[in-house]
Image 1 (tube, rainbow, N blue to C red):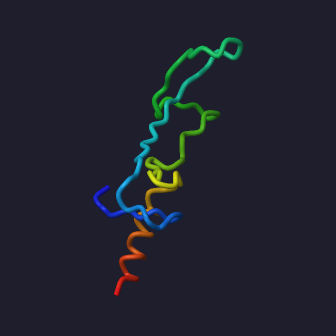
Image 2: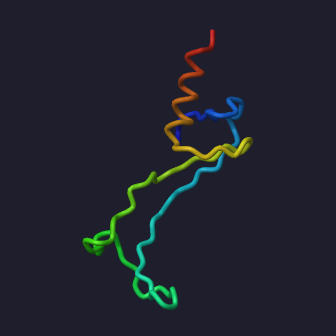
Length: 85
């Protein structure tokens, strides 16, 4: 997170962001009650339990609320920096 951000939607926010760290939790539930029967680590998953493949970090603009991949905010800041005279 040592790179500048710029919101790709409102194009004005460079300071106020929410960084969302996604940490998957693998569980087995009781089908009748919904209670957690077992909590698994990623190396304990069986063939029918797919590992999480989503983004590890998402960013939300603190001004307009847009939530995107971190890379979009970084690329927008880099692009606009190149646009300045």
